Image (cartoon, rainbow, N blue to C red):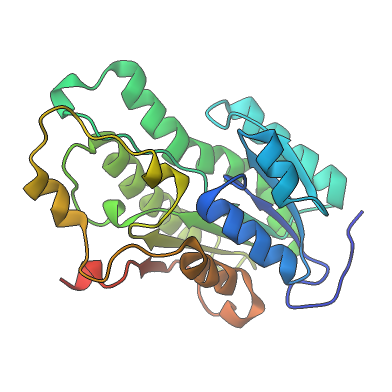
Length: 248
């Protein structure tokens, strides 16, 4: 059952991954403030509860395809459907490429590429039925190379490809599929970031911008726009929100 509240997203149902912190949390709060019923997923149940007190959540490990299907099922049953899917969950650990293990490589792809695919696949019947939308959170690492980030870059490049492939396949079917590529943000992911042993910091600094880090709400504002009817003509787009990084 939905709240069917007033506002920009009144009567809409949004499934947001990574909603327990950072960008996903900012998106969940923005959509909820706009009147949407929000179903959030993440690993930290206490944070999910605090973020989505008036909505619903599921603590889940989205590297498991079954957990992705369960998140979609639980959301659609709780709120009678899905109008919006925001794939905001992500993970990034820098490593020397030659030292990346099979397990680490598979984890990079599972979190950053496979989970959005499995969630989108499961949500498509609902989104097609309700003429909804998908917003995939990629990264500027999906548009360029970044040192010590082979798995992350490969996954985010793949996520942009997935976005464009789905946009083409479902063109004219009523749903919209777009991607956002953020630059550096002040999130727990960045606060707990670790670098590989003996890195070349001149390579790492190539990812920085003189304008500094962004607040997650600055990126969430763009995602919220893409979820809204105001973006009804935006389909198959890849938006960079990076404080000017890609212009350097």
